[in-house]
Amino acid sequence: MATGKVELEFDVGEVEKHHVRFIFDQIWGPVRIRVDDDVVVKRFEMFSLSKMRTYAFTVGTGETHHVDIVKTRKRMAGGLRKQSVVARVDGNVVASDPE
Image (cartoon, rainbow, N blue to C red; front, top):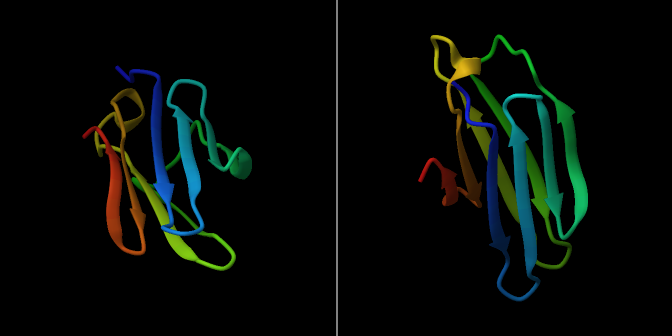
């Protein structure tokens, strides 16, 4: 059965630093992505036919970075099983759950 919350946190940037936090509650459905405490994604995803969801956004103003967070569920009983999440910054994996 789904274990509840999936959370990822990671930093982006060398000179212009930002902190990204991804939170997904598998049981109740809310997805939140924050950059430096500002909400950049706020969705409710309790039911989905798609096995994969990608959240893409840019972080920074002077030093910009492309962030992709990909949430993947299993094919059979996907909503009842822990979903995997992978975060990439400029194409490089920086965090994942399960690790």
